[in-house]
Image (tube, rainbow, N blue to C red; front, side, top):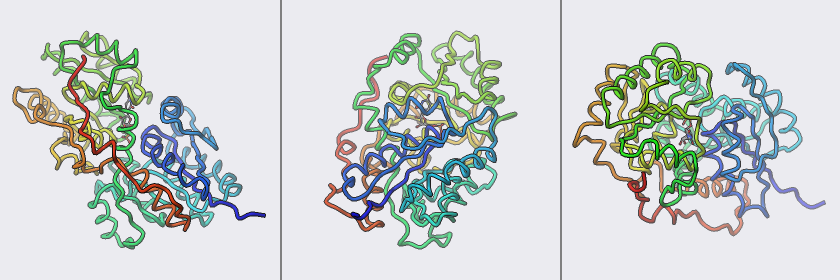
Length: 403
Ligand code: UDP
């Protein structure tokens, strides 16, 4: 019997994990003669994820389908541990890759650890410094760092954070964040408004400055979410030159508050989540982004767009330092002030331009870098092409244009 190819298992279950792991999964293709790349979709998010599997052309080898209505982190974690165990036993991966800070990532890492399978952590070393915020993500990422044997960091700062926690330098590789790869692959050079939904949104808001909102963080439910939405509603009501476009997250709490506070205003558009190409096309035509998303903070430098971050803290200070983000501290009065400031003539938000190779999250070659590092770890480095970021090194896409 011939020697079995080692298996690299990649686990994801939410939209941001798929966006960031798709470039990694594809980067294993040149190594196919030497290793077998296997994917697991836990199904932590269901409807939100499916269109992304298509647009990123990611094949799912094992679908766990753990999502239930009103699920808690404990339920998600328990269901994943239970469902992934027989898959680990059957596939016997040589390494299991998880990304970021979700319950899927934590559960995947625990399950691999229990089976003696080394864990590789993509987007390692982010810290907000507050164990309860964002919840449960900050603790998830700290625990994954303890469980993982290999750490792939987006930035030098993330590497320094891990070193300060006593993680061995030889287990850390600075690779950049594969969200930049994803953005280049899907966004296209011109962010063309091909999607009918994007086209109709752009038509409906022609001539207005567009504020694009996303918010869904668990720790904001209750007071902060409601207060932020009221501030945005009042701001749009006062500013006849601006509109608000909110692709509303399917979480029932977010839906309820969005409907109660924002529905009915002619310059407020509550829409279903958009596929990645359409969403990037919308961001490229935005005046301002307001968001509690981690990924959007990372996309802002590539798009040259200003973001007001609806968070008390951020584990991505690189976006603030590069001049693309400001933190509202989840204080409604501060959000009101930041909105006024950002939407005033001559503001900081107007002067931003897309960064190219100076992107704090890397030039867009993180997928190939991670794949190469994994191949080295497994001792199967074949003649795969070296990582390149040729797309990223071209001039950044224009952000003005149609709409
Ligand atoms: N996104 C998208 N369509 C939408 C809203 C967001 O494609 O309607 C993308 C966005 O560009 C970013 C990611 O989804 O890359 C953010 O996901 P989310 O906010 O769920 O997670 P986080 O970034 O906070 O982990």
